[in-house]
Length: 142
Image 1: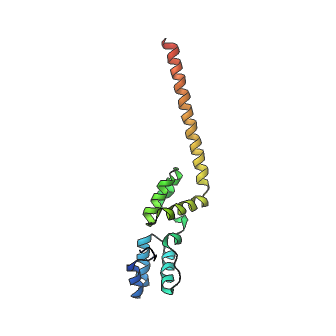
Image 2: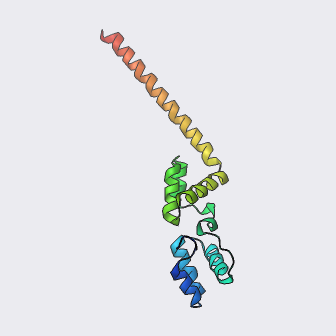
């Protein structure tokens, strides 16, 4: 895929040879788009209309499973990386897609906040328990 055209030379060749089904298959393989999005991209090229970029055409709700799991664990950077690898897009586009997914699913942020609170409480408990153990040792060992 070139920088100024959202379709590759192979897709353009398939379209010019009158084989739109092959063109749609290639778009799906190259971009990871769904059938409807790939068809819309090919149809727009055939009609000579302005074509959306593949990253813009792909809905945010179609995040790879790896990205969703990373978000649930609070690893936003790993989610962006997974989207970049699966869709073969740039960092900015992947970040926008992940941000849109988080906006559509605010419960992810609520879960992350609760998880951080739980971790903080566990950390605080460990410090207090350690301090008590040291105090007891100091008191009874001397």
